[in-house]
Length: 171
Image 1 (cartoon, one colour):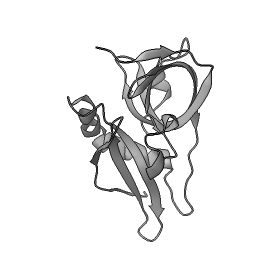
Image 2 (cartoon, rainbow, N blue to C red):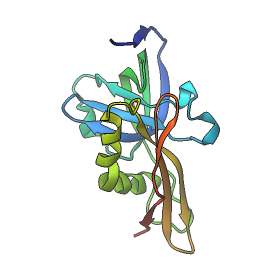
Image 3 (cartoon, helix red, strand yellow):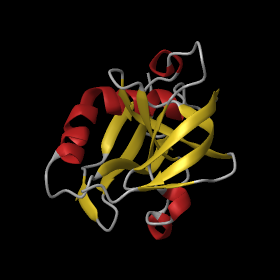
């Protein structure tokens, strides 16, 4: 039984990181880019699968894993993760810390390319509550010249898995 429902909403926008790309269904999973411990269950922080790109655009060719995007959306389906239709998508530049060579998007892309498949398997596991990967923190350590990335898998109601901190050399 599908417990989601259509909620007509005015056009709004969401900024977040692309955590998964489903080329077959032309969908991308976007998770809020400014998360902290207290707001992972906040509606604005909820992950959303976006589909139906603007005409003549193939969504998965425009967005890459780890990209920070701003998406104009409407017609949000209330589910977990949410589902929405895209009206427009814009790739945003991400910050590079002082002394770092890589941007946040490049770092996240590297983590997801190496570990994303395992993270998304949990999403598809029965009983996981649709747990999706969410960036908890992403910090640059100038002394070690590396990035430390903390990711959790979050369902609608709880943290399902906390991954060991990922370390990415800034090269």
